Length: 445
Image (cartoon, rainbow, N blue to C red; front, top):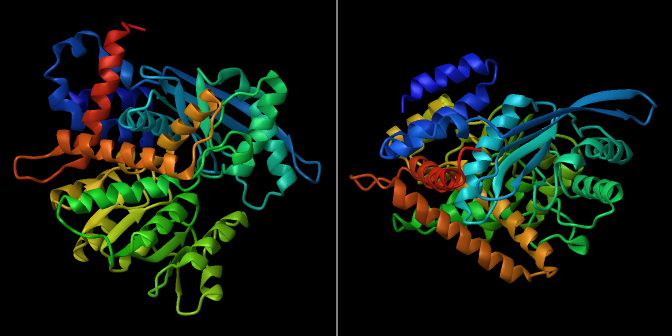
């Protein structure tokens, strides 16, 4: 496989989609050697099919605000690959949403879902609508307008969306209600639902919980105990909340959270009260974390800066894509950390990843670390199918098992001759081989 030629062709074909091209290049570089061991893949043009989504749906979303003004946003659903199961992936409502980001997320989701061991294909969707400053009624009307088009393309055995940035329990509720009204069907077509109407226990926390289970296993490969270690986290939404909660339960001390306005440094560490306050901040609909400083004495707000400048044992990206760049990686490496992990999707730039791996830093990519969220969504799908609700312990035990299995796959394919575990390569090869074998078995479709 000539990675550079494939990327050049894609750059010509899909100019202006940097996030998508970045994601494709990372995977192709990792799987090149194993791909070249299978000439049947080349004959079937497997890569050429794998890097293109099976279907891209774009649509307008007109809606009316509280003042009677009409707005028009763009809606997306990228159904990337269904080789191992129905499409599965979140919906993101954020002003930054565009086709490149949707395609990169759908491409990543394909391999992440393959790693979970559950039968789920890869997809992603959303809109450039921002919930910031919008009333509850406006959010409801937007969700209803969005679902009036999306419902035609989803279903429990076709495509099962979930939440993502800007799409939490409230938005899932409005989307589900509209789907049910339009189809006359009560079915598990969305995950992240409320417990009273088909949701799974620990789903909101699952991405962060699963990440800490994975990070803990990474540390154990070097006989390191997470207890007593300091953790720098970015973000302050559901993902950061779950990661902070589980890290604290495991005995670590979370010393930072962040938002677009800057970051909070709290040397005393987050406790239960502070972690709950993170949710209150997020629920306010404002993308700012500065009020934390006023709420808790001893904490300090650093405007317009990133938490990576603080010394910590463990660094976790929990906000958005490419939030940790090459300069940040240099800063982190100077702190001599124990571990760095992407809890956000593609939280590090390609330059940052290259620097961390070149330094033999213990580092793991988002498609492995944050798979606990979609894994628990898969468990919610199972509960909906069998019309049963599992206890928190049952779900958590299954999440533990899935994250342990993902870690095992990463080690299997990523362990280098010198003993260093290249988790990026391990995750990409493991996910790719499962999807590739399924595609080969199903013919040229």
